Structures are given as C-alpha cells and as structure tokens.
Image (tube, rainbow, N blue to C red):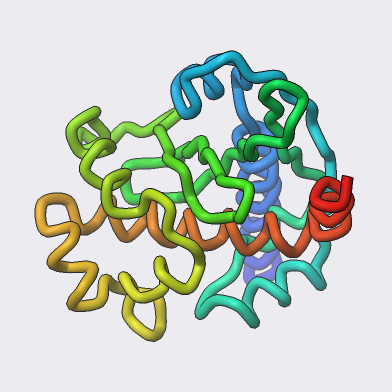
Length: 204
C-alpha cells in the first residue's frame, strides 16, 4: 500500500512537471509578431527572429542580477525578435509567461535599443484587472526604465512593492508586482542569453 502511494505521488509530480514545461514551451512566445509591432511600436517596422538556448548557467546569471530568477522549465530555446525601421535596428520584442492565482499570464514586451522597457500588453490574462486602463497606468510607470530603475519599485527580496512602488501602483498592486517581476526577468535574460547577438547588432 505504501509503495502504491509513493508511485502515485511520483506519477502526479511527473505529470505536473511536464504540464508546466509544455505550458511554458507553448506560451513563452509571441503569438503574432506583426500585431505586437502594431500595438507596441505603431509604425512600419520589419523584424527578424533570433533564437537562443537559455541555459541553466543563464538562469543562475539572472539570479546574480535579481533577487529571483526564471523558472527551471524555461531552460530551453526562446526567440527574441529584432525590429528594424528604414534599415536600422529599432528595438526588440519578446514574450514571457508568468503563473498567477488566476492562471497563466502571457505578456508581450517592447524593449528599447538600450534594453530599457518601451511598453507591454497582455496576450493572455484572466484577471478582471487586466484591462486597458490598468495596462496604460502600469506602462506609464515602467516606460523607458532599465533594470536598476525597475528594481527600485520592488522590495529588496523582490517579493513585494517598495514604498515607491506602492505609491506608483496604488490601484492595482498585485498585478503591478507580477508585471514588474516579469519585466525584470525579460530584460535580464535578454542581456544574458542574447549577449553575443546584441553585440553584433550594435557593432554593425
């Protein structure tokens, strides 16, 4: 009987692991890059994709930059979209998935050339707070902020908003916390996993 219980527990954990891995693999990407460009950049842009393998070493490197890191199931191949306007590098697009109490949240991110944030929108979010008004409000606070500036909006351990963050996001603090943590992971992993590719872009 005890062996059967252990077997069932191991089976359930295995199923949960592969479900999480499949969810991240399925959702940690832009569903429609062209639509994302229109929403986040609103102009005539071209794009190309750069695929990188996010490694366990990359995951640990994120932990060196932030008080938290990406999920272990994200150690796999991911895509960064490079935008061009009039033949010149004009920014990046990337998507991230985050687990929340209301389910999986997919966020599409626009990133400036200097790797500060441009803006974001929700590809998928079941929370009633995920509306245009809240998105605009959060975007206003994170626009053009880099990693160090965003970290000031979080507590030292990254588990809550700082006093500055609480003042900035008084109307939707729970959702803002999720978005901020996602923003920081997005910027950190972009710098780490696509470092060589970005250096080539900057030198060309």
